[in-house]
Image (cartoon, rainbow, N blue to C red):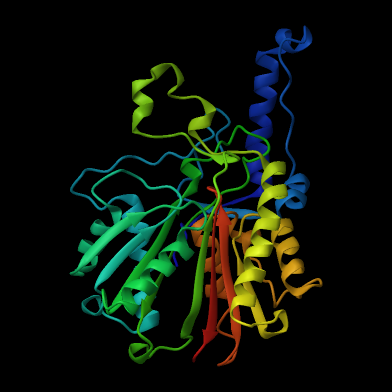
Amino acid sequence: MYVPPHKISNEELVGAFNEYVHRYNRAHASEIENGSLKPLLESSPEFILKASGIKSRYVLDRAGILDPEVLRPHIPERADDQLSIMAEMAVAAARNALADAEKKPADIDAVIISCAVLQRAYPAIAIEVQNAHGITGFAFDMSVGCASATYAMHIARGLIETGGARAVLVCNPEILSGHANFKERDSHFLFGDAATAFIVEREETAQASNVWQIVSSKLKAQFSNNIRNNFGFLNRCAPETRDTPDKLFVQHGRKVFKEVLPLVSHFIAEHLEEHHLGAAEIKRLWLHQANINMNQFVAHKVYGRDPTESEAPNVIGEYGNTSSAGAIICFHEHSADLSPGDYGVLCTFGAGYSAGSVILKKLS
């Protein structure tokens, strides 16, 4: 995995946001007084922690985000002959994954970049990463919102099983500070930047420590507008709405809670039942790191009781919501302690709606 060196606490983020609120309300005092405009409300560290479980996040740029006059990261464009910032993050995460798996670039036949938000349309970030590592074979990008990592794992598994590749490198670089609306009270605190990577290969070639078997993977999609970002190449064709807030992250949180939680809880239970696995056999759940309250609900449904911290660990407190990377970070930090033969479930879910469940069994 890879995280940027810059960290922002809730207190710092709230300080910048509240100063923006004060300036906005002062600038629009007359409209607020006559009722034609509603005043903006302050945020607080206590509100953020209670609503999400988030305490901090890592980002590519602190200065722009913490400037009340800017409230967005400053990430300069790079020349075409330079490694893109998203590829750079993926390359760093991939380098660590290759070392952990005791693999060389020559051992990899395919590279998949799978994340919620891609930096550009083409050329594929995956091909750029492939080139940076000197990997031959093929590479492609894909995006399925917060479920991108498990969707890519499912596809990588299929490539291995059908003989399409000996080993597949999957990277999940997320620059979510770039699509966050830092002027929106209900979501300004959600996102962090991070990149994760993992390798899927045949069991007989896996020689490293902390090796896991993909017992089964299952995907589900159900259309919803409740998590949406309308940014795209056609925005320039409608300049009157090019910079409206819907070109950033927009979420109807209450609807998401109401619809996603039962969907995911049933999805995991159904997957386990298909493989005759009971909750007592699942030593760990690595869930999408979007909201600690959502994860506690899902874990309670899966186990039929309140789970222990060991059974359903969370990393959202430190990293914030890193979309597709979150559950992989959670796995990275909370999997080595389990024993060979132990089962776990990696489940990611979010925009789309999309969900992916992977039943894993520890081999070494």
